[in-house]
Image (cartoon, rainbow, N blue to C red):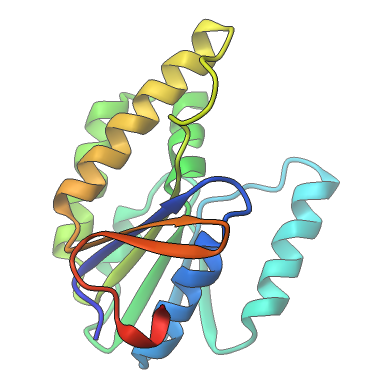
Length: 177
């Protein structure tokens, strides 16, 4: 059984999305995929199409590059949500020059109010080199604060590295290990 809020995070191509999808699939019930990615080029369009095909028709996909609160508010108790990913959501808001603290407050409140369990996927950006430019450093720092706030609110927090889950908070369901 999934807790109300799960955070699955890790580096690029670490296996975090695969683990998150497994958690949602094993939970049962209706599956809602909140997608924050936007297809600005052919490579991203192909990646989105590939992911849609991998998930199959048993998922209801909702594109939510900025407004996640509205679709989270329409989720029923019998559904489970996979929000993939918080990193792109943050990037979208930074590009829109939004108030990141205010948007994060809105996101966290919406996650708390959601009727069904939610699994949030996010990247870990703080283990790399210090970025050379101010925008990249500002993004890295904002992302670190976002992950900290998500982790504080989550009942289950899992770091994924090289396809291996490391539970940092809560209890990972045995079938997903």
